[in-house]
Length: 367
Ligand SMILES: O=C(O)CCC(=O)C(=O)O
Ligand SMILES: [Fe+2]
Image 1 (tube, rainbow, N blue to C red):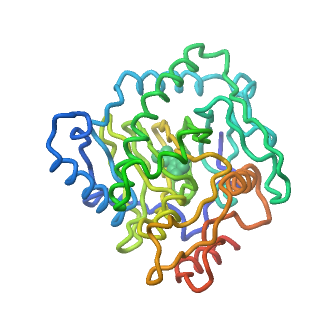
Image 2 (cartoon, protein in one colour; image 1 turned 60 degrees about the vertical axis):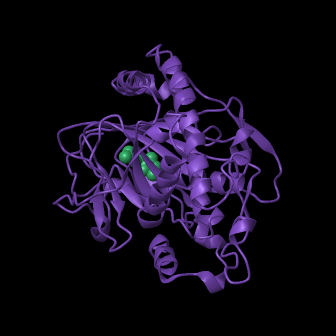
């Protein structure tokens, strides 16, 4: 990535502001009551209340004392650095293509503008099965095989170890979120206990000559259920504050994970929780690494508001949709610049429930 190609340039209203707003920031939640089995139930109730408030008010929070060993994360971070440090020809040996979107890639587009980053994607389950096409009538299923590079040789093992640790955390978070919605702790688990389509991305954001024009990742919402993000100490993630739409910089906290609820939890909760927009700014001097772990259900999951959370007063705001088909459609539009609208959950919203924000987003996505 040399000088700034016009494909990277954000429209004026979406460019990062020169001054970073640090503000109070997203809530920090201490998960130690979960690690300590002898702790009183009172602690768990407080923890659930903190999760509820964070999900409602921010859609984002950081967790500390989460049980993922620091060495496990550091091993992946340093193997990722070794991988991305290689020549482009080496990285392209595991490049992804239209048929298999796993592996290396440096031309992702978010809302049709190219991101200033390179990535390496792999799935957690082997095999991971996904619909073969976005065509609703095509019932064919295909495998997404992981493509592990020969160099650095330690990358695969580091990633596989890390995944085991973060997966445990993901199930704890799903329990906390279930409890926070006044559901039984294990209510969400069955969507993930078999055939989950969770995948992990190693992100590398190289220094950028025009950090005021481009973004590492353009504004977006995560399509899956939950994201568990590790970021290094450089910082760059910005979250759109729900109260006023201001972009808030997420200060790096060493060894913490940043959690956000994705679109699926928004639909399951019938909008009690909302998937919040975020983006990544880049800088001209320091490269940055981050590792999002996208917790996604089995491809055949039909996503719709949970029966326990709807009634006559609070009817379902969304029509049911198939997760695998949604995922494939989204992947296709991120792969190359398309002339079609990027699929979003508001496409499944019942017309009477559309909010002004949905309409504005829809118009913005069309232009
Ligand atoms: O790098 C980050 O901080 C966030 C990346 C992100 O939002 C994503 O990959 O969906
Ligand atoms: Fe994201």
